[in-house]
Image (cartoon, rainbow, N blue to C red; front, top):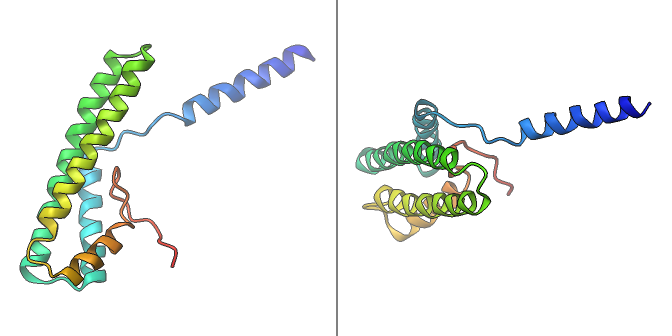
Length: 140
C-alpha cells in the first residue's frame, strides 16, 4: 500500500512539474497574434488609413522584439540553470524589457491619435496579453 501511495505521489509531482513549464511562443505565432490584435483594435477603434498602418507596424515590431527577447532569455535561463538568484534576475530583466517594448509600441501606435482616441486605445489594448499578444475577454 505504501508503494502504491508513493508511486501516485511521484506521478502527480512529475505531472505538475511538467505543466508548470512556460511554453515558448515562436516568432510566427507572435506575428500571427499581432495581426489578430491589430484586427481587434481596428474593429474596436474603427481605424483606417495611416492610423491603422501605424498600429500594424508597431504591433509587428513589438512581436519581433518579444520573439528576440524570449530567445535571449531562454539562453540566459539555460546558462543560469540551478542558480535561483540568476533566474530571478533574468525574470526581472525580462519584465523590464517587455515594459520598455510596451511603452515604445504604444507610443508608435498612437502617433496622430487625439486624446480621446488614445484613451480608447489604452482601454482596448488591455485586452491584449503582453507576452503572447492573444486577445482575452474583458469583463464589462
